[in-house]
Image 1 (cartoon, rainbow, N blue to C red):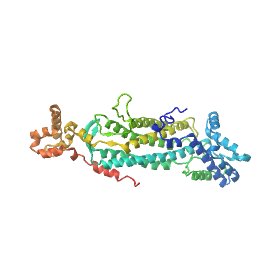
Image 2 (cartoon, helix red, strand yellow; image 1 turned 60 degrees about the horizontal axis):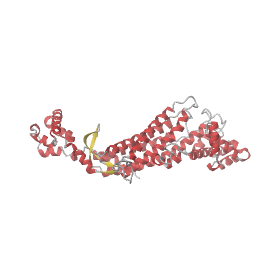
Image 3 (cartoon, rainbow, N blue to C red; image 1 turned 90 degrees about the vertical axis):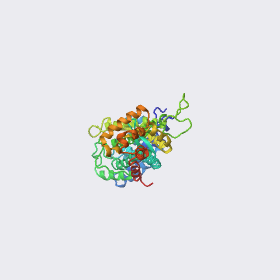
Length: 450
């Protein structure tokens, strides 16, 4: 009986993805516990800490199909943690009491934390793949519309012309930085945990560090320099990373929503029959994917804050902050998967209306070119005076509802210095795109070879 958006049979494909849900599923998490117990047994059998026969017997039973999940639920509810239930079942499965060597020298948090790291590793692969696909789509839009003029907006008001490629390249630059962050945080986060009750590995009289190194090597993780049972900056960094990615996806969705407004109509989410329609207004085409992105990333940001709360842990093993991670980390990743999926669909199928973009530039009959005119007049009459003069002329253009160019050309303090053809060039949006194209090219040059 699913009760959350992520597990809902109706909503799960909108707010998450099946691959990410599998990463954080009970089945995958439990298999990770078993993988770690098997790796621990192999290492300790190899170095002689436990009998090789015991190691082989333990490893032979570290398969999910041998675990009674219903019983594990009962054990977890009674004990408070699932690890002891898994170890208990493994012990019972082993012959001749060889299972007593399972979990040798480990503590519950060692297995739990290492399993979480293994899940994070799988989850980050999914995140990076989606970011790469989004980057490809943004790069295509940036290249295609490198020189497509559109109005830039400041405080929701028309400002000066930019290009649509420039807008897409700005988002692309952030996505590329997120991929860099992801690569960098792997070194800090993909670290195993095997440290015993209070982190000192006192449970093993010999071979402690050898076991720790071997276990991490078996699992493909880095060996910790010191126990991190209650030093949780690594997990919080993952949350912060997801929050940053969500912020960029939120920026994308916000701009798409605004540009899809009826009065603007510059871009549209991909069309699918009935998608984003209204039950009462047949004409509606709502920015539905952007709405889902906005909702998901808002919750992810709150989860990032919760993971920072989980850093405030007491002494060497904590009393509650650790469990915050159990609640929010899976949900943060699952919601991020949904936001990434919606974002990818939007940018890969985005409908761009360059005609509407030009129409919107021309809405003010040239007023958006006032900065260009001011800068063009500056060498003749001074920048500050040019600002005040153009300001007054703009107000008059609004009052008379006439094109800015006409009033500029009529003004005696202007036409004595600048002819009509020059003023027309100053008022042409295509001539005032600045270094938009150069900046697009610089961002595209940073795209990794695929």
